[in-house]
Length: 222
Length: 259
Ligand SMILES: Nc1ncnc2c1ncn2[C@@H]1O[C@H](COP(=O)(O)OP(=O)(O)OP(=O)(O)O)[C@@H](O)[C@H]1O
Ligand SMILES: [Mg+2]
Image 1 (cartoon, rainbow over the protein chains, first blue to last red):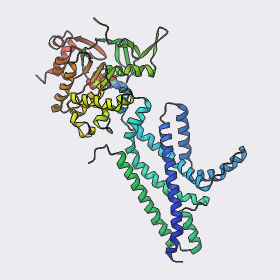
Image 2: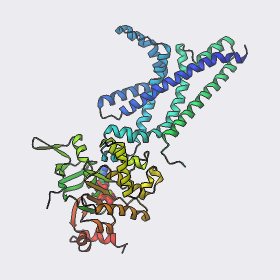
Image 3: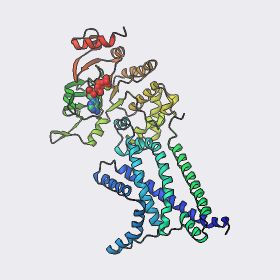
Image 4: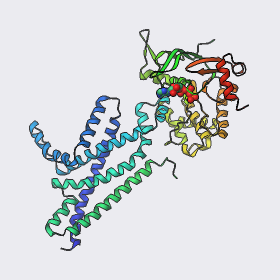
């Protein structure tokens, strides 16, 4: 088997990895903002829910979360009589998104809290509501601060997708493992996917760089 | 005398164990221009911040335009104000900050139109026209599309003034509006404030270290020290023949290097 013959199945796997990454990133981003903002809410129920979510998903490993969603949740469902059997893709996206969202929430909270108090007081003096202050004053100023840590999280998330091969999802790592088992050509296979992951990470990081540029367009540039 | 527009009635403000305002009585008449002077830490900013509802009070009552500021009347008794009441009261007041506090992510124009549109429900068109009039007033009509970081401190502060005026307050609070400026930029800001002072409708409270300017624009000057109003009077009297020894000392200290 020539190494070029590895490429079609690997590219197929890479496509699954891309999808997993994108979907879980979108889910993670939504959760980051929801829980990050929620943690600062004066409403104790919202605050409590956010804190519990963040702590649980930061305090346990992604692998355990993935296995729990895929293997344990259906059994819990059986007990209460609901079908909670998740297709591997859904379980993978959920686990990745929930996990990255918990870390992202802390980024959002931290960046919001770093907005100068004077800005919030000025918003109050101008009679903005709490919600208007959040959306019009605090978030736009916090966004640029979030981007560098978000970039790290996004790349982390991409790398974490390899874990879902453990619930037999045909991602890049899964395909590589298959080919390697078949051909015993570890060096070639792993070298190829190394570059593939690296390439995807580059694309992802430059996407977030672009986003950062866009949300910081009002800032002074040296 | 008409009904005062601002009345502090035995107001006490504490930060923990520190009493910053000690049973302060203080009134301002509608349209009056009042300067507040005094040493650092005497509670000048605190007075303005309390009026802008940025700091609550611990005792006493403040009346603004006939209504209690930090209280609400319910069944003939005064109870602590709700956020809705504070929002209603805030409409009467505008504040200009020492550090300008412009919103860095908005253009000059949006800094001025954002609150009228979001808070007062003004149409974009109307807010824009009004903002351009105000920019004209402060001499910055040509800077509408710039971001704050592209302006000098003096220009930023003039935008700050226009932004506060855009909410059409009855009372304008200025907290050392020129203290953060390079000396050569102080004049342009004082010129704008001076212009406003000639509008007789607007009530103005100005905390300042610019004694000469305070003397020019104010109807009355109040000297604060250690959370109390030690002395108040027309500028000519207070600056030339202060009654209190502490006022004399303070004026001597701040005026000496300039003379
Ligand atoms: N948030 C706060 N927490 C604790 N103490 C405070 C706070 N804000 C002000 N103070 C204290 O209250 C006192 C009065 O402060 P204030 O800012 O009103 O003084 P000021 O007259 O405006 O002084 P300056 O000329 O330096 O601006 C000071 O002793 C200050 O340290
Ligand atoms: Mg002060």
